[in-house]
Image (cartoon, rainbow, N blue to C red; front, side, top):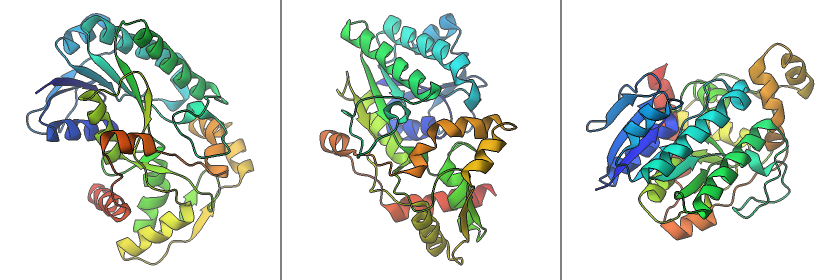
Length: 312
């Protein structure tokens, strides 16, 4: 049994924790305020990851560190992420623990074909550039022999346990559609194929990497074929047993003007291409290497509906 430190107690951190527990591993979860409601047998600690002394003490003896944290304010990535990422990478180097970083697809920028791990990274904005630099810094440390690193790249995620407001699909599509309410997307088109990654599948890959040998490269999360927002909303209504929702999308001009007043809307502008044109993830490599398959779509949606209904 190995020891693994998961930094972040949001949906991804908790999904990773569950997968590690199922694999018979010891898990410690860190968050700034101290995680609550953890599974039995999981230790939780309150740690400021920018405090290197405290962080070093928390990861002592760990086989891996899973970086499943994100700055709480989406619009302050440029101010907060570089220091946080450097602190976590430094802790991995000093402790000897492997570093598994949960990232995203921002670094690829605008694409014209399904994305594989070999797709060139050409970010088209600040947040994508930050993610690319984080990976380059980690890979440089790996290649220099200072630590072992890998990166998990999901598409836009959803599922039970997602923190409020962090999942576009949970918030704007599945929640309203399951309640029989209108669906209104804040960005993008309704009939554009888009890959959606499930929280449980993100956690399963992160755990496989933390306990395995996939170091030195990035891996895409096992993800089902793409679905449009209209398809998702229709299928959610059928599974929830409610009439099909009325579906609409905010016009580009509304989002643009709204950005003057809402930092969150302003930040969505950088990634709007992901929802305005086909955005498809190819996860063949991870599925074949680790023997993982995406969770059945009906299970993904049903479990998400049940979780959202329980919260409301």
